[in-house]
Amino acid sequence: MKLAIVILNWNGQAMLRTYLPTVLEYSRDEATVFVADNASTDDSMTMLRRDFPSVKTIQLEQNWGFADGYNKALARIEADYYLLLNSDVQVTHHWLTPLIEFMDNHPECAVCQPKLLSVHDRDSFEYAGASGGYLDKYGYPFCRGRIFDTVEVDNGQYDYRTEVLWATGACLMIRSEDYWRVNGLDGRFFAHNEEIDMCWRLRLLGRKIYCIPESYVYHVGGGTLPKGNPMKTFLNFRNNLTMLYKNLPEQELRHVMRWRWFLDYLAAFETLIVNRNVGDFKAIFRARKAFRSWLPDFKEDRARIQASRVVETVSERRQFSLLWQYYAKGRKHYADLP
Image 1 (tube, rainbow, N blue to C red):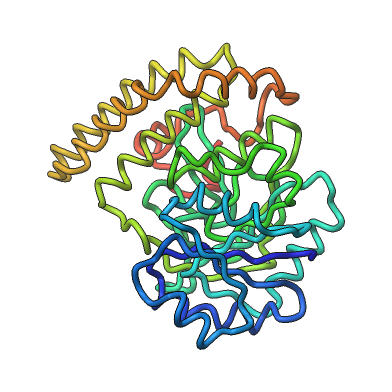
Image 2: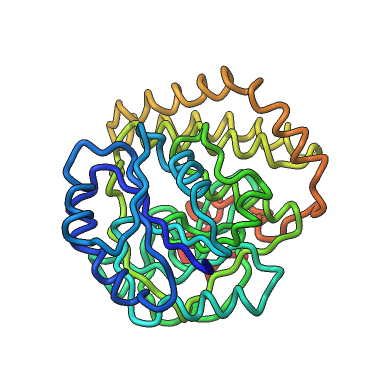
């Protein structure tokens, strides 16, 4: 099998019913479609077997989360390429062809993504991945088309292929050999930042990540854990710190972590005082505590990653503070960044 499209589902019956038909219609000749179910308690699997008999299903015995859910599902699938697709993505006509052709013609590319637009505002980028992702010096993610909560209108300003640091887990194509080269997504993350971590590990091995904007899809976003959910905040902060610990070069680790200690607590008090969000305030403190408690579990990971890295400086991790550029300099569009 050349390409397996794999949709990870957890109680997403409504999303599957809405968006799966276009996946099947526009992928019919190019891919096999799988739905891997994370022990849903709704009627997702019954509906799939009844209404979408051409879809292959994988039943997981419990909810493993996004990261390990995909690891366990993909271990059962033999394909040259995997395409990880959220259930709340509406694909478009000929969306697959540019991605497949690019991967076929560029063996140095491990991962690519299409342009991600919003279902709710179809002229704008979508928060989760826009037109490809980067990190700043201190580990804050941003995209071509989205910085923090500022999402740009898509006027074609980023309609060119480019290398990025990470591709969105909402719609990510990866060579199976590269997926398993780094042992896939880190299942301990459960959800959030896991695709950034995996892409960063691949970049350290000299592999490349691209955005291919002539392919575009529409994403709902926030389907499992909506913005403002304290669990989402907890996972984002804990996993982002863990990702930094695993992947930062030795000469930067202490400096970046010291700054993050300050910046995270600043963010916590900002959520409390400005936004009056007690849940997120507590979640950031819990995330810092959880990071410290499970840090010993990642020492071997860090040692292995640092020993095997062949790229010392990843240029897509930009050497500026995104917070400074955004709040002090007022640079809220990707094209305005240094």
